[in-house]
Image (cartoon, rainbow, N blue to C red; front, side, top):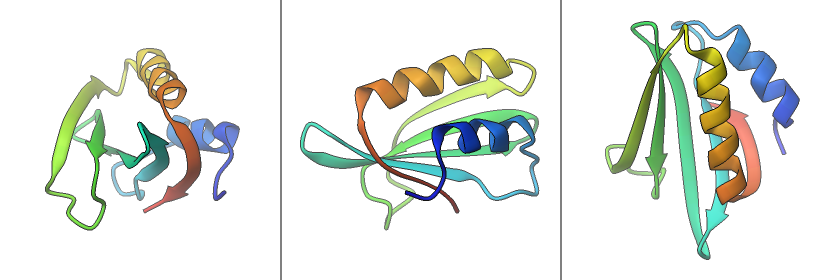
Length: 91
């Protein structure tokens, strides 16, 4: 595994728009699932992607203001509980 959960949250605490995003890779219902997390326009974006080779195939998107960091972290924890995490890595 690339990053630990703690390293992931430390990275998010200091995330800037010019830094690479983070990908959470896991399995849900016997299928691969990816959550792509990045910062743009002072907002956190969490994209749900089933096929990472086709990033335009975003199934769902959560958008939270950067000032709502705690709410963002709670949302990420909810998503992590829904999947079997296989890897966390920088884009």
